[in-house]
Image 1 (cartoon, rainbow over the protein chains, first blue to last red):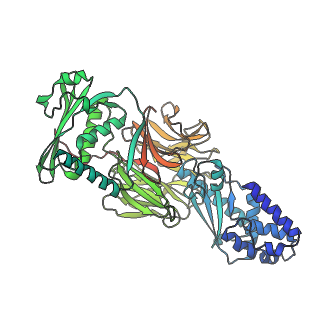
Image 2 (image 1 turned 90 degrees about the horizontal axis):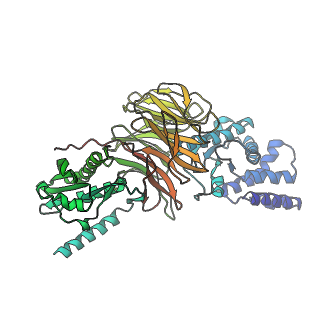
Length: 174
Length: 438
C-alpha cells in the first residue's frame, strides 16, 4: 500500500520533470472523486496562497498530497506522523487559500480493543488533525470533528493490512 | 392420524422458520462431563389442542445448555410418570439419574393453562420442589424458564438465570445496498427476538435499566453519537444527550435514578453523571486523558471506568460522587470496559493478552486477574445476573458472534445468528414479573 503510493509520487515527479505536468494534474493517483476535485483546484490555490511561483515539481507534490483525504495512525495512538503531517499541511494551505470551504474531520479506529474506548480514541484522532490545521491558520469555526470509533471500518477483514486502513482520520470537504 | 399430525407440525415449523429470518441459536462448544444427571419426563398434555410451546422441551434445553447438568436421553426411560403416585424411583436409579422432573400442562379455561411440575431426589426418594402456575398461552415459555431456574437453584444451590433476556446489536449488509443495524432483545435461550431500534447508521452500547424495562443506547442516526433511553414496553424513547462531541457509554445507577455517561463537550472524553428526572449533569473526571466506559458497583458507591491517563487503557475505580481514582489493573498494556458481577466481588473486562483481546475477570479483594478466553477479538463482556456466566462478543470465521463462558472458564457456548454480525451483548437483570403458587 505504502510502496504503491511512493511509486505513484515518484511517477508523478518523473512526469513533471518530463514537462507533462499540466495534463497529469487532473489525474490524481488515489483514484477517488474527492481527490480528483481537489487535485484540479490545487494549482490555482498554490499560486494565490504563496504569491510566488512554485516549481512544477512542488506543484505536483502538493496536488498529490491534496488528493489524499485520509491520514493514518498507529494502534491506540493519535500521534501525527510525517506522512500524515505532509497531507494535513497541504490541505491547510488549500483551506487558507479557499476560505469558503468548510470541512469535517472524521476519526476512526480499527476493531481491536473496546468500542466505547475507540469512540473516544477516534475523536482524539480527529482533534489531533484539527489542532494541527488550526495552528496552520484554518479557522476553527470552519471545522467540525466527529468520531465513528470502530463503527465504520473501510476494510472488513480481521488482519493488520485491513486494520491499518481503518485507523484513520478522514478530511471531508463540505 | 398420528403421522398426519406430525406432518402438520413439521409444516408449521418450516413456515415459522421462514417467517422469522434472523434466528439466534445456541450451541455448547465446551462443556463439563461432571454435570448432575437429570431425567425430564415429557410433560403430559391434558386438553383438546396442544399449546404452541412445549414446556418440558424448553426446560430440557435450558438445563443442558447450562453445562451444569447431564440430561438423560428420553429413549432410555423405563417409565414415563406424570403424577407423583406413578413415580418408581428404582426405574431412575438404574439409569443413574440423580434427579427426576415430571409435570403436566392442562387447559384450565379458554386461553389459560395450568402448568404443574415436581422435582424429585431419586436417591433420597423425596420431592425437592413442586409448583403450579396458571398462565396465559403467551407466558408458557416464561413459565418453562422459571421452572428451569427453580431446578437449577435446588440442584446447584445457586440461582438460575434462564428467566432473563439479552440485548445485542446486529449488522446485516446486503450485497448491494446499505447496512442495517438493529438493537434487539431476545430471551436468554435466543428465542423471542424483537427489534427495539432499526437504523442505517451504527447503534452501540445497549445498557439495561435495573428494572429491566428500559434500554439506554448510543445511536448514530443523526450522523454522530447521541444517547437515547427507550422503554421496552411501549417503545417510547427520549434523547438524553446530544452535546457537542461524543455522547457515549451509558450506564445506569443501581437505583435507576442516574445515568453515568461519557461526554466530550468540554473538549475531552470525561465521565459525567446525569440525574434522570432533572437532567442535571455532574462531571466526575478531570483528566486530559480518555476517561470512558463507566460502570456502577452494585451498592452504588463506586464507579469503575477505563482511562489511558497512565499511557495505556487501564481500569480505575472512584467514588460515585467523583474524586481521586485508584488504578485496579496492572497486568498488560490494555485493560478496558469493566463491569461488576452482581455480588460486587469481581469484575469482567477486556484484556490484551498474548497479542489477543480476551475476556478476563478480577477478584477485587486480592486483585488477581484471570483470562478466560483464548480467542483474539473478544469484547463487551457482561455477567449474567447470577454471576455464573459472562456473555461477550467475539469473531468466528470472519463473522461477529456472541459467546458465553462460565466464570470459571470451564463451560463455553456460541450464540449463532443466521446472517450478518452480532455484537455488544448485555445481559438483563432478573425478571421477577411471574408469580407462582406451590
